[in-house]
Image (cartoon, rainbow, N blue to C red; front, side, top):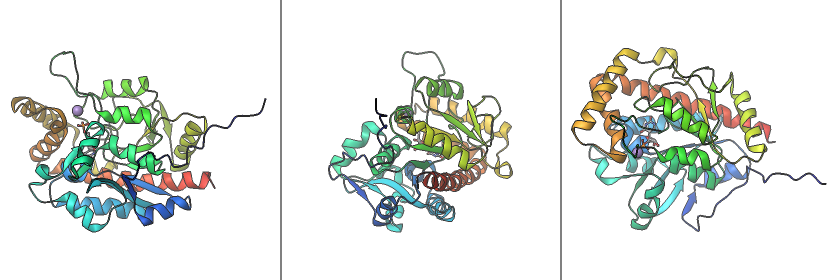
Amino acid sequence: MADRQPANPFSRDSNAKGLLAISDEVAEALEDSRPVVALESTIISHGMPYARNLLVAKACEAEVREGGAVPATVAILDGVIRVGLDARDLERLAGGPKNKELVTKTSLRDLGAVLATKTPGATTVATTMFAAAQAGIRVFATGGIGGVHRQAEPGPSPDVSADLTALATWPVAVVCAGAKAVLDLHRTIEALETLGVPVIGQGTDVLPEFWTRGGDLPVPVRSNDAETTAAILASHWGSGLTSGAVVANPIPTTAEADPRAIDEAIAEGLAAASAAGVRGRDVTPFLLAHISEVTAGASLEANEALVRHNASVAARIAVALADLNT
Ligand code: PSU
Ligand code: MN
């Protein structure tokens, strides 16, 4: 019997019927099989205050370029999913102090409505993974994925991010500093196991906890460099599996926030969110802003450092992956 080859996981896979627009620079890089790294936009519109958000968005693109890859920031603008933005697009997403009213945080369930109304949308990890997969991009950098939120009291429907659904569904590696530590990290890593999503600790044996390097939860596999991570990813997809992967990359030691201060700020943030009745997609942006306030900006400094580091490491992984495929 002849060997049956799995479908090429690096081919483009778009069913977007004209609603997906890839910039010329990104399209040319993909055409030539050169390394490309996707970046998300919820972190710009809802994860950081104006005008720091714009500086960080540009810095992440620069980190990707320095690492030898082409950045492809994703957002929804004028009724189209855009892959690869210019400076003016980034400014629109960064907006001003009232940006939250203008740009919709767009997860998978929101995508159709945001496209139909032609209003600007910032893509979450889930929606960015979807767009990346459609475009044929395999590596994506963000700060931290969403996951299973902590629950004050046991109830029937815990708040679970569609980021997990996306990780189970599309062949994109998400380079991140673990999941945001406001979540229930234990349940999040168990959910990833159930969904069959590899969690590769790059240079770490434990799950990074966003603002800190973590220590409580072991990761299932460790890789010591971008080449090893790329080899694991290539084998994961080469086997025929079509799910995504988490590449857990801890914040550099020099940029790590004080774990005690962060734990206290998280507890305060969670109490404030529940007192203010914050729910659904507003929870994560509320907590990030509150924790930054309580830590006098220390958490924001750490957030910038970790997301830039992820962009840089993602570029190296994209380069190593491109080398494996040529
Ligand atoms: N990483 C950051 N800041 C962020 C996010 C990630 O450093 O704001 C965003 C991502 O877009 C992620 C979202 O998908 O937070 C999770 O939101 P939720 O918990 O509502 O699914
Ligand atoms: Mn949620």
